[in-house]
Length: 160
Image (cartoon, rainbow, N blue to C red):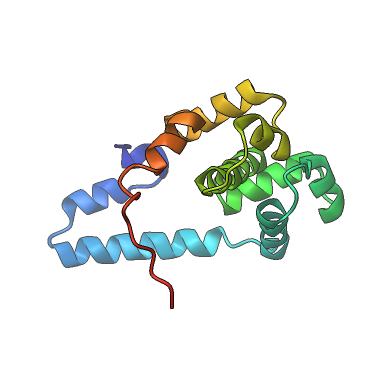
């Protein structure tokens, strides 16, 4: 739980506390959120969409420096753009995207070895891959692979 006063620097929590009804509280929150949306609209939404598309659909070896060059912005501008519009850094988005790709690769019935997956998705080595995977999933890739097969052995796959 986060204290409302630490998130916004106005008197919203006080106004909510003194509101007479739930309807009034909802109206206060609605007004606040609408105002926040209007204040934080950015001109660079196209750049953000393009950057996300490159990170999600592109090669995992796409460096953030290459991304900056394609968008014609500085490292700091890229960082600010992502923080303001997405709430995460471009590096974290890149790490999450790479994790999602490895998760998909591990889920395949004919999945490669862990070393091959680590190499394919540009991890420095297998231990780096395992640490990163455990950070995002709470389990190792091998444990995930074992758990992914549990309970589906007798499952009949439906084909149209």
